[in-house]
Every structure is written in C-alpha cells, then in structure tokens.
Amino acid sequence: MFSILYHLTGISILEICFFFYYIGPVETEMFKHTLQLLIQDSTNEIKTSSDPYLQQNITSLLGLISDNNEFMMTEMKNNSNISKIHRDELNNVLFMKAIKYWTILCFISILLGFAEYRYLQYHKLIKNDGIATIVYTEPDDTQTYRKGSIDEQTDGLLLIYEPKNTNAITNIISNTNTSTISNTNTSTISNTNTNTNTISNTNTISSTNTISREKLIKKTVHYIAFGGFILTFQYLFFRYIIYYYNPLSLNETKYLIYQGLLTNGL
Image (cartoon, rainbow, N blue to C red; front, side):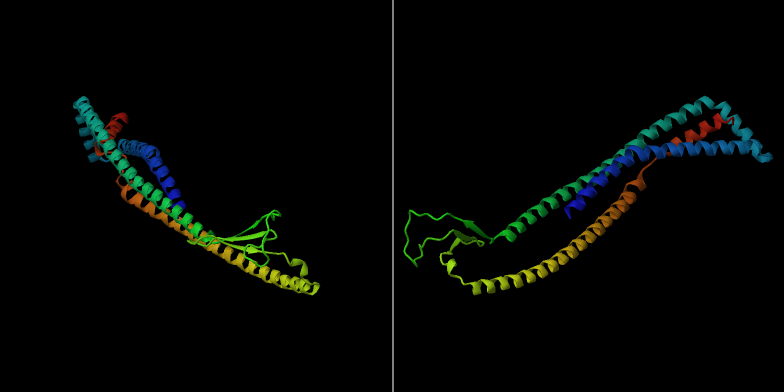
C-alpha cells in the first residue's frame, strides 16, 4: 500500500509544479491571443458595416478616444499592472495551498510506509521463528561416554530447534547402529520415500497455483487502488485548485480591448 502512496505523492507534486509553472502562464497567453483575434475580427466587421446607427456610435467612440487617448491609456495601463500583481499574488497563495496539501500527503505516505515496513519485518520474524537447524559435528575420539547414557557420543548429526520464547532444545540424533538396517527395510524405506516425493510434488504444484492466484489478486487490487487514488487526486486538484486559478484579471482585459481598438484603427 505504501508504494501506491509514494507513486501518488510523486505524480501529484509533478502535476502541481507543471500546472503553476507552465500550464497557467500558457493559459494566460492563450486568453490574450484569443482576445486580440476577437477584437480584430470585430473591428473589421464594424468598418465594413452599413448600419447608420452603428457608424454613428463608432464616430462618437472615435471622438472620445481621440480626446482622451493619452489619459485613458495611462490609467488603464496602471490599473492593468496593479491587477496583474494582485492576480499573481492570489495565484501564488493558491500554489502554496496546493503545496501545503501535498506536504500532508507526503507525511502520511512516509508514516504509513514506515508502519507497513515495521509490520512486515515483525511478521517475517514470527514466520521464521522455530525453524530446525541441522548441524554436522565431528566426533571427538579423545572423550569416552557410557553406552545408553544421555552423554553418549553421537555419530555426527546435531538437531537444534529454537521455538519462540523458550530456551534452545538440543536433540542428539545418533546413527551408531545405522549399519544394522537390513536390505528389506532399505527397500521399504525407498518405496516410502517415493510415495512421499509424489505427494510432495503434488502439494508443491497446488501450493504454486495458490500463490499465483494470490499474486494475481494482489496485483489487481493494487492497480485498482492506484487508479482510484489518481482519480480522487485529479478531482480534488481540479475542484479546489485549478477552478480558482485566475489566468487574466478584468482590468487586464479592459486594457487589452482598448489597446486592440487603437491598434486596429478605431
């Protein structure tokens, strides 16, 4: 689960920076360009229009612009610059808000990742506890032992079993009398081992199929959860961040319209 959050954290910070440092400024330039094209097209239609009322209004507008050209241009430009500064400040506040939410997501991801890591380590220790270890030891000919006693010399095999929360228990397996096993017993043991191997192989195949199904289920759940987290992030980012982003202020729009009218001969 923590890997999903790590991927989501990385994708989210990339998208936040990409939007505020690239997409946002590009949107502003696109709005300006579209507005200039709109003004140019409108002025061309006004110039070619035969409507007397429209021509009369245009004549009055031209007179107003001519009389107050310098004053209006300076005032609109100042208002446009002030509005641009205010717009950048608001967008910067919005950017810091997104970074704040991302920091919370990053902290939660690290916290859950550390908790899952500790859980897996603890589970691994529990799973590996109590495994028997076989150790081969060379017999010591310099020592003597009484036959049948607990101190009897082993012939080389030492089985050590360490269960959880108990002292190590050492069982000595002696194979002193292994040479007395008859050929009949050997054949019986061989047949038994063959049957055991067949059952073991069947159990191994069944266990492998079970593990494969479990891995498939885990992968499916992993990708579904990852897709759900991505969709949730996209919805929240568009709803509470992009929706409130301001690519162009009202005073900037007024100045662009006025400047467009002068540029196109009105």
